[in-house]
Image (cartoon, rainbow, N blue to C red):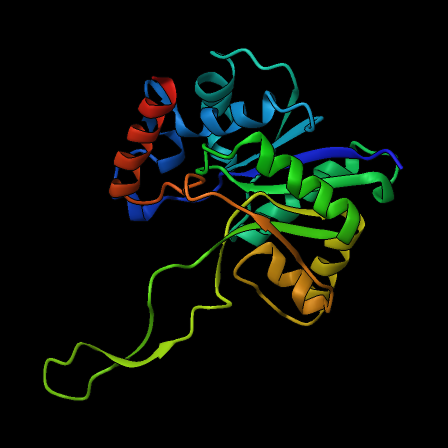
Length: 243
C-alpha cells in the first residue's frame, strides 16, 4: 500500500524557558530562524510529501513574512492555528491533514517539535517505516546518566533530597518526530478526549489506547532548543555541520 506522508511541525508555544523577548522558535541560528531550519530538514527529505506548520494565530503574518517567504521550499507548506495546549495544536494540525487526503488508511503523519532543527533523513525514514509496519513509532535515545528520584526535605529551608536511584537499564529519552498511521492517532485522540486523559507526548495517547509504540534509534544531536544553553549548543552543531 502506498502511503502519503505528512509532517506536522508544532511551533505554537511561548518559549518561556528561553527567557528571551523573541519566541524560541523564531530565534536565529546562523541568521536563519530555528523554525526555518526545522522546515528545511523535512522539505529536503524525499519521504515527506506535505508540511503542516502549527503556529499561534496572531503569528501567521509574521511566519509567512519571516519564516517561509524569504526561503525557497519545494513542498507545500500549510499553516494551521495553534491551540491553548500542545495537544490542541496537534489536533488542529491533524484536522488540516484530514482536509487534504482521500483516505485516513493511506496516510502517515509525523508530529515534530518546531525547535528540533537537527533531525536527519535517517530518523525520518526509519520512523515512517516503523509506523507503516507497527502503526506507531518514535525515535528515542538510551539514557546513560544515573537517574535519581527526589523528594522535598522537611527541614527548615529544605531543598531536594535523593529518595532513590532508578535503574536506567530500560529507560529511554523520547524524541520527535513521533510518527503514526493517521487513523490510529485520530482514534487515540478521540479515546483520550472521551476519558479526559492528557499525555506528555503524542505517543502516550497511543499507549493509553492500549496500542504498542515501536522505538527506533534517535540521535543525541536531535536536540530540542528550549534554553539559552541549548541555543549555544545549536550554534555549535550548526557550525560543525557547515565546516
